[in-house]
Image 1 (cartoon, rainbow over the protein chains, first blue to last red):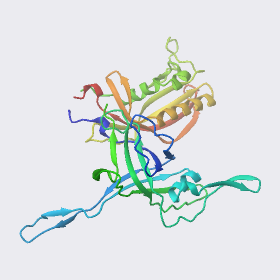
Image 2 (image 1 turned 90 degrees about the vertical axis):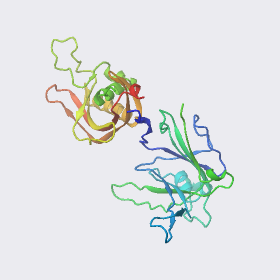
Image 3 (image 1 turned 120 degrees about the horizontal axis):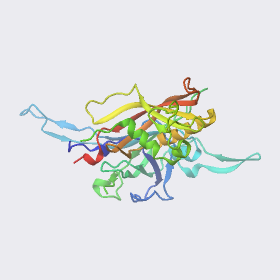
Image 4 (image 1 turned 30 degrees about the vertical axis):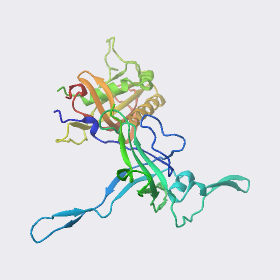
Length: 191
Length: 150
């Protein structure tokens, strides 16, 4: 019975924030500051992936592998946005600076180009759950210091369906961090 | 270790919410008390009431110490609008549950989630002639009292 850790079950969706690359991780016991933009609302599953298959090496002396190396690894965060504001779309497609406020006739409008360009915008990403800590009813967060939006959104519309934006943020190595932290880290509150 | 009654935990959760008790007062239980003629505890049909009772359809996780099931929430009201108003507040409570803790008669319960399951049904209860909105909700509740964990 002592092995029971009910708070250790990670249940429920998280809140997802983006900020400009270089924005530091916010304190766990404070709301993310004004530099963090909350991407939302999301719907459906949210996936946090750590990929990186090993290459195994064998020799004639053994039946099993004798060594392994991981040549590549990725950290990816995937979720679906259901609010198609230009502020959300621009951050997923290219950059918020592409959204301009102007007029069309007598109407006030916001305008966003379709072209994404060659070089993606680099972001910091924060995935935060207010009760995600496995050690009690505390928050937990995963901070990725450098990432890009790898999404190829397909907004599919229908008579009784909702256009949803499939998002995928992929971590890039951040040389400004220590070796272990270059693809981000988790912070969970314990007390 | 003490076992948690998931239905009681969910009832106590609703009973702890001012948005609910402002509407139902003390009229919240597993079964309604509208028909207790002559009893001092008889419920007032002109006031909102909430009943939470077990509903079939949940799965059982045999290897995990969690209850996974369904409850039927019945929102009673003096008018259809009042019943719907209570339902909307109850739906808000459900949406806000993320590892909620609530004190029950057998210790503190941990409710991981309480998710609305399908759409609601509105009508009039045939026996009591009180307007109702009925909604089922799925839940996951840890089976044991949190105080009893070592």
